[in-house]
Length: 248
Image (tube, rainbow, N blue to C red; front, side, top):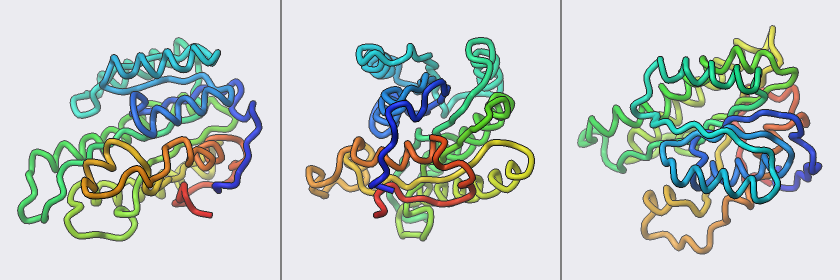
């Protein structure tokens, strides 16, 4: 969907929550959604970097975002309940949810994998998206056209040696997406999909592929067409599918 050309007001009057909004793909997605009319809820654990995303949106004359500083590795049920109450009071509904925050862990054989890192990856990559989605469902049900996007990766669609917890949690997210899509299909206006960004120039990519020539990779802004398509009304009726941001 790289040739998709969204109208400028594609996301007008929509309230969209983006996790991992402080840096990388999450930050660019938030800026892009704001440029197309959305009001953003920015969630990340990095407060100063999150404020930079906030400033970039307001300086570009975007709608004033809301900021939620939350470490998904440490968040409790109480945190998610408080978040739901805050969003309900401030906005009354939610039209979109992009799960982008992720923990890479380490690249190592499973038999040698650090179990502390394994547990943290599952907390951030699987448990947090589930708990956040559960908390947001009552708000998403209030929307006439809501979209949930789970960011995954190719290593979650075909197993690859040494990708450990990151690869396994991406598989889990694909299953979570499919299950949730079927459960919400019959009686809601909520569609649910997964999206693999592909090779993109980000800090996580540098950590995962330190020997790669990163200057040759596309910037996150180059893959935003698919994010806009899945988040906007043009993808209405598209649910339960695994998408690729760089697929022609």
